[in-house]
Image 1 (spheres, rainbow, N blue to C red):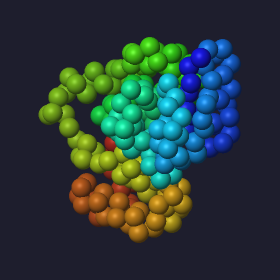
Image 2: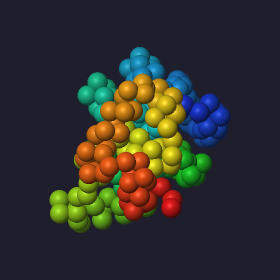
Image 3: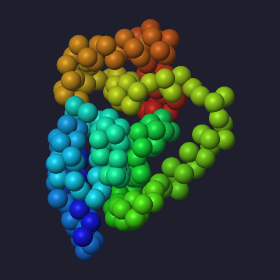
Amino acid sequence: MIKVLLADDHSIVRAGLVRIIEESGDMRVVAEAADGREALAFALRQRPDVAVIDISMPGLDGIDVAARLRSQAPDLPVIILTMYEEEQYLVRAVEAGVMGYVTKRSAPAQLVAAIRRVHGGSRYFSAEATEILALRLARGAGGRSALDSLSARELQVLRQLALGQTNREIAAAYDISVKTVDTYRFRLLKKLNLRNNAEISRFAIQNNLIEP
């Protein structure tokens, strides 16, 4: 049996994914985590065969967890589970050393196959993700954008600000302080040469991070 760690902060989503995984017949979920720090602790303590980790969680996000596991448990393959299909998240996941990248939209059809693939030592990326990475490689360094300077958490805060969320709402969603959100917002404005939230929203729309 393939032992799986599953981390997602939404209990209903997590329950559905557990069912999908365990109905496969050759794998079982040995630990469930609701935030990034819990996922990291369970991964180091339970030593699962594969870790499936949501990219957007309170505390440490999925990419933070994957990066830490790469140094603390390098033999543990990580699959990032995400609702984001944008290039910036995929690239950061690859840089963090993940072995697989599955969107929540495609999870029912692809998650079991992804777990089997990475457990066998191979990578698993959807056709869409593979195409994104190929285009990124073809563009090379000359194709880098302002978004490349942002961390995964800064990208998440950028999206939420662009969607009209307040600093307090963002802080509650990611289990961080309002002061920390203020710091992220300041960094975003400086890195992207923007002046206010209205310009953040326009930037996000122009870069396909949110729908217009």
